[in-house]
Length: 113
Image (cartoon, rainbow, N blue to C red):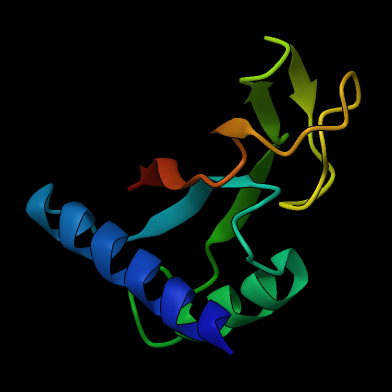
C-alpha cells in the first residue's frame, strides 16, 4: 500500500516545516490530488491518521481537493476531461494527447499553533 508511504512523507515534510517555525501543533493539512495520480483517497485518509500518531500532527484534520483530469488532443486541438489514462479524445477518438492536469500530489497548505 503506497498510500502509507505517501502519508508518512507528507507528515515528515509538514512536521519539519512546523518545527522550523517553532510550532508545537499541526491542526490541519490541505492537499491537492489529481484524479490520475493513482492514489486511493480513502486509503490515504486512513494512513494519514495512522502516520500522525505520536507526532505534533496527531489529531490533525486532512482536507483533500481533487483535481480533475484534463488533456489536450494534439490531433484536433481539443481540450477535454479524462476519465482515465486510457480515455481517447471525445472529439476525434485519438489517443495522441498531452495530459495537462490530473497527476498532481501536492501539499497546498497546513495550519499550525
